[in-house]
Image (cartoon, rainbow, N blue to C red; front, side, top):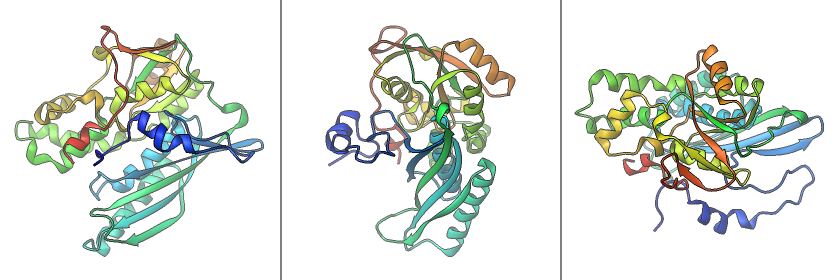
Length: 321
């Protein structure tokens, strides 16, 4: 029996990643731990691609999440999202109205993100019990636009707030568990979908000397810090007290017994750069909340108080879903 959520990194490497090989000249190589995007070499432009399923969202938001989560991966890789392919799977009990609503949500989110939906697949199947998507993003970047990668001494700057996506999903789908959370907090949590895109801050980060970026999805901010550093064989320290968290996330996590630092955080971007203060100032000037939360090290993962920082595991959200 396997636990819901991501495989841990050791299992992922053993069962899946170790089996893939580079065989094409256009490919930059097989996938690696911590890498959310793949690149293909087509001359002056590099094609950047990534794919992600959405399985835990209410049908009202699954379109927006499908668009933003995938565009965020490409943007965090330093690329400009261009187009999406969307596979939409629905259980037999769903209605044509649900199909139309998801399609409209996809269309609206794609327009806001500045991408086109160019294809995919739609199917009614009893293999799923709720509306599910799997989306592939296609993006582009100039050959000289590839990020250099993290290096020891880099500051880690975080945008927005920990647990952003998880807070929204819990408020939408597990409101009955939040009897001790004030109603106005729950309402604010439900409106967090407008903060899910990291494309704007990725552009600012690129223009201000980002060495690497990583969006905080499953596994939350702490899992994302681990993955950001592991991309280049480095370690990291993180200061728990510096991580921005909304009051509604604190209250919702307290009510559900979840760890906000390990809660799904789509909408938050981690940026490794030489000057964390300057990067934070540039983001603030554009109206984007941001704060330095740690630093890249040569090896080892720890919090600033010396306690170990565990690698990413199953997201906290799966304890409720």
